[in-house]
Length: 174
Image (cartoon, rainbow, N blue to C red; front, side, top):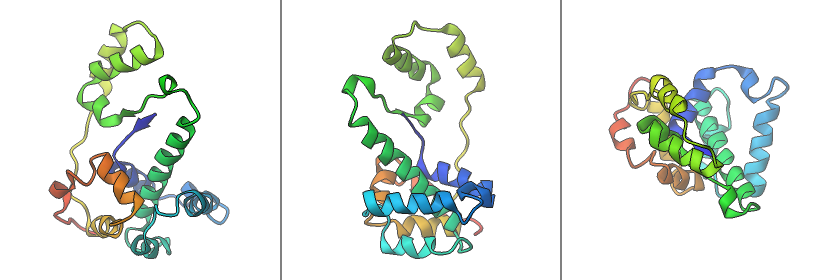
C-alpha cells in the first residue's frame, strides 16, 4: 500500500476540477464516500470540516473533499490489511520513493521476493521527481484548521503533513 501526503493528494484532486471526478450522476462517488465516512469512520470529519464540505462551491471544498477521499482510502486499505497475515502487507510512503528510490525499490523487491533490478533502479532515478511544496492558500489553510480534533487530523499528523505544514502556513492566494 502506497501512502502519499494528504495535502498533496487533495491538491491533485482539487486541481482536476471536473464535476465527473465525484460522479456525473448526482455526485454518486461523493455520496458513497460520505456514506462510508458516516457509517464506518464517524470520527473522521469534525463539525467545522462538515460545514466546508456542505457545498461544492464553497472555498476549499474541493480540497476538503480530496482530504476526505485520501483519508478513507488509507483507512479502508488498512481495514482490509487487518484480514491479511502481517507478512502479506507492506505500507510504503511515496515521499520515501522520491527521496531514495534505490532503498525504496530494495525494500519492495525484498517484500515481493524479487531479485534486485538495476534497470528498475536506474529507471526510477531517471523518472521519479519530487516537487517543491508551495504555500497553502487561505482556503487550504482554513480546511486544515477545520480538521482539528478529528481522525482526519490524526492521519495528517501521522504522515507528516501537519508536522511540516508550518513552512506552508503563509497563506497564498485563495
